[in-house]
Length: 186
Image (cartoon, rainbow, N blue to C red; front, side, top):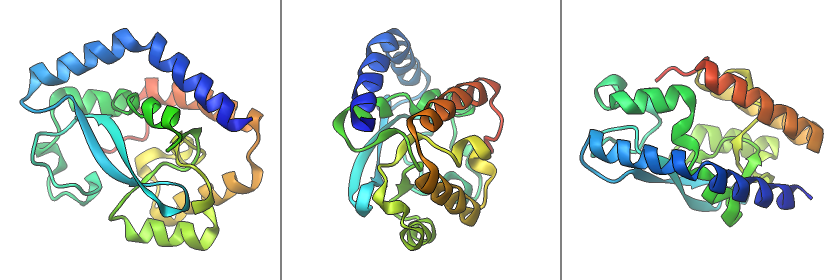
């Protein structure tokens, strides 16, 4: 049932948000040289790598590491990119990954291929059995502000308690959090 809801939700989202997606793609291209989308290698279900799209929020040539690991993140993030990150609009292309089956609407946020500490802790907690999500339980409890062990603890809580009703609640809370911009560090 979860997969069916993912497909329906992602397809509806891509159709309904297509004007917004197009406008953002054009705005990214006009703001700075380079492609509108950035495809990063992410860790999916059972630690399989997959290409995940995001609207490009950084200048071309930015290192492919978690933003908090950059010495001066602000020097890489574009002005439009800062706005998209604060509102989570940069994440909308991931609806494509949900449609393809690499992601779910709700689950643990996908780790970068080189976030070894996060991957190891998720493996130990059994979280790697879940499809990563466009949003998740940890996401609504702190976004960028959470230390890795806390994210994994929340991911494990989701694994143990997940239901369709919980997923719907997470989606609604994500929308409220995204509009407020709370919890985004970079």
